[in-house]
Amino acid sequence: PSAAAEGRIAASAWRAAAPTAAQSFELLRQIVLTGLYFYGYSEVAMKALKNVHPVTHAIGNTMRRVVIMLICIAVFNTPMSIAGAVGSATAIGGSYVYAMVKSAEKATAEAAAKS
Image (tube, rainbow, N blue to C red):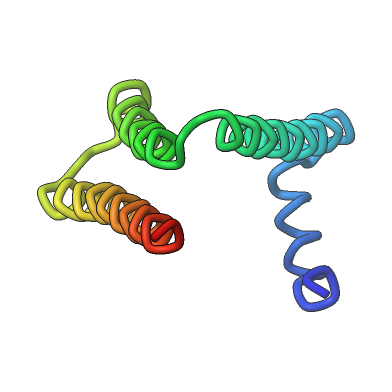
């Protein structure tokens, strides 16, 4: 569906990004590797979730976001405005609080089921 909707735009964007056959092959290789890495990440995340407590997994996932953000700032010299820092802190804090609330709800439901 997306190829039909944006086929002409995608083709010209592809030619701009990779004008030669060798560059086109390298771009395609990078796209495939990105997909494989993401698949591998998802598999590892699911295996980790099966082996650790959900709260531990949520904390690890939140820390992963923080580490990625810090690496991007340090390695790629990504500027961080005050608004960006507040927004990032809000998003990270919000995801952490959400995970904690969901875990507490689950624990409450399990305790109620045992009673």
